[in-house]
Length: 179
Image 1: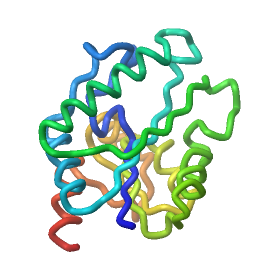
Image 2 (image 1 turned 90 degrees about the vertical axis):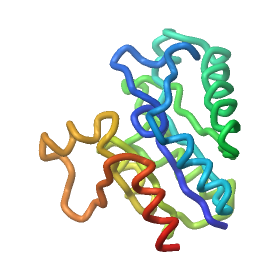
Image 3 (image 1 turned 60 degrees about the vertical axis):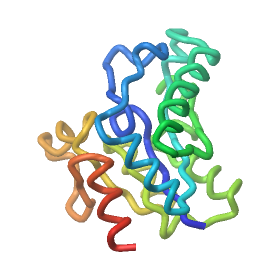
Image 4 (image 1 turned 120 degrees about the vertical axis):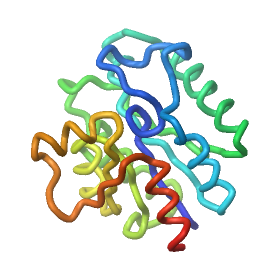
């Protein structure tokens, strides 16, 4: 199975320090939906993994989160793309759960549910918490400069050897041309 795992905020859509709390606030990063559609059309399964502590902080409800994801999927469908699953952590950092990135719980759950090793699975994020979770689960980390990616690079937080791309579209174009 060709599988790719994507973070949501900062990779697929614009991020916000105030959280994405409603469908109105969800805005795709230019080119991201078209890129995901290319993956779908080339036989990839796409899974989104996202920390959503706004739920634990009671800034929005599960119904609002579902509405955000419905908007994401509706916009993606216009380009012929499909997101096969969304895994999210609703906890705040103080909960110390295993599903909140940088811990690998959600990635391990994907591996178990899909009966697939993550060794050859690209996992795209914009923060070191994404990269740490991916590495702990045995996946192949990729950092994009969108979202908080450039800031993480500027702060010297990204270790050597982590592939870095301008955005999701640039990364997907590369993997599809070298496939």
